[in-house]
Amino acid sequence: MAKDPAILAHQEWLGYVQPSGLVVSIPALLDARAYVNRNIAPDHQRFLSALPTDRDGEPVPDIADFPAFASSVFGWAPEDLYGAPGAPALPETLEAPLPAYSETLRPTYALHDFQPADPTREWILLIEVLPTGTDLDSVAVMESRRWQASPQARFERLLRETGVPIGLLVNGRQIRLVYAPRIESSGSITFNLPDMVKVAGRPIFAALHELLYSDRMFGDPKERLPAILENSRKYQNVVSTQLAGQVLEALYELLRGFQAAQDQSKNVQLHGGLLDDILARDPNLVYAGLLTTLLRLVFLLYAEDRGLLSTDPVYANYYSVTGLYERLRADAGRYPDTMYQRYGAWAQLLALFRLIYAGGSHGGMRIPPREGYLFDPHRYPFLEGRHQRTDEPAIPRVSDGVLYHVLSKLMVLDGERLS
Image (spheres, rainbow, N blue to C red):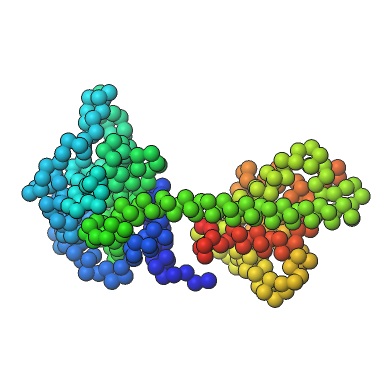
């Protein structure tokens, strides 16, 4: 299924900037009509014009005057940026005293909402401007009496203490959007100016502009930046609940598949059923093994979707989970009545699990051995049909219909790939 171009555009810039924690979610952006502007060239040129230039007239990625930059690039009115020249001074309510360290945290500027829908939320975001090139995540050498913390940690503390959860941390060469609600985990997105001055970096600049331009600050309350950030957390909770339901359904389907394999094994094996020994010793191992199988599949789907495993046709056509799902989907369309009488998909998954654990190569395909705990084939021998008494492998007869429904639950969530 082809994805919405608006979704792909947001996935593109989010992939470039690699957010730390949850800041914005694509559904919340789309609900607020926040789209990546593909015709960003005029705004990008205004951005370049707001930067200093070198001897050759090329823009230098350094914000020397943030109020002037914000006014030119984002369209913020100078009088709304408290603490800036010509604007009101910052009130003491935006300070965070730290008595234990004999210091007070305070922002450099604060963006004021001249028509707040909620009188208790008159501040849209706080801005702290640091010297050019300051490392936002490292602890600088300070006086022993002061709080020894990184600029990021200090800024998050300021946001939480003042009750203004949104802020910009600026060091001349980076603009970091920080979201730190008082009782929730924080998140941040860092926009690097050296990337955005390039033509290839226009999607990143387009995203920054879409999040911070004046209409997003002062327009429809439902489409403002604070609403986007709040709704992103709500969407995350909804998606997490839905995902938990999808995984639980997949677990039940896989359990039914192994129950059927257990029943069949009793009819053909003199030494008992596939699960007899493990059920007698520790039934919880069955649950743990099946859940581990789902975790393996989630890991592989995530890695394949991002090209982290081999892109060689041998892997894509004969080993990958994505390729297996497409074949099972095609089979389900052609032979819907016999999917639970067809076998072979489980054996392919076992081969894939072994390949990830031990590694392998063929032609251009190179899979390094990862070993580790998750794919260790000796943790749950029953998944491979190894019986405790004989240790002779007899691959469980888990039907293709079972695996098709399991993968369907993991591959699709509200029309989106799990990743």
